[in-house]
Length: 248
Image: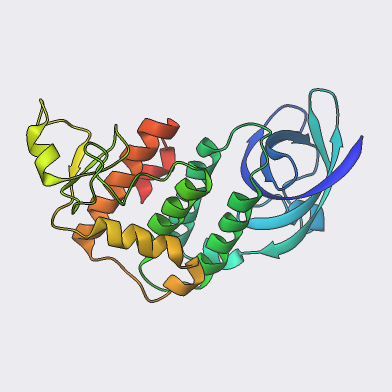
């Protein structure tokens, strides 16, 4: 069966006989693996659409157990990302992070649109790229229905100021509950009483990425947020061992 879909290339692997396997995040089918004989070199519209940071349309042959990309065309190329080392590394990290969050052949159109919006903003952003990545990850957790509890303590259920964040229990913990824990040195607790993490995350949630152009977290707050998000994703989504993580 021939079909087509919009998509973003997440990863590609060279195989035998000049073929490649493309891991494609498609709007219609979600994350799929598709073989192709389209050459990676050259300036044909199909070859260009298989490059990183390209939003394209792909003609697929959908078999019973596999997909094949017959042809492709570029809808938009975010070539500016590849011209800046920091942007490229951060973009590659987001692609790998997103890949690990997606289930096979499970459409996620809201996340698809969010990823395209991220690329649009990343291409033109001049500073605070790490803040943009954290905003994307926060929004991604929300889209997937896995946003941590931010309004009340996960232990007592009361609306008290956040003293710490519990990765395991999935939300903020107040000072009283944190002090009553049997193991106060619990490694899943991340102290956040000095940082208004709740306000930052809520700000990310209510504003589109394109409105965060002039927002950049200070270095210390950024490190706490990064540790929180990565630990939470590793625990609840099994997103770990990200190769590009060491480069950002």
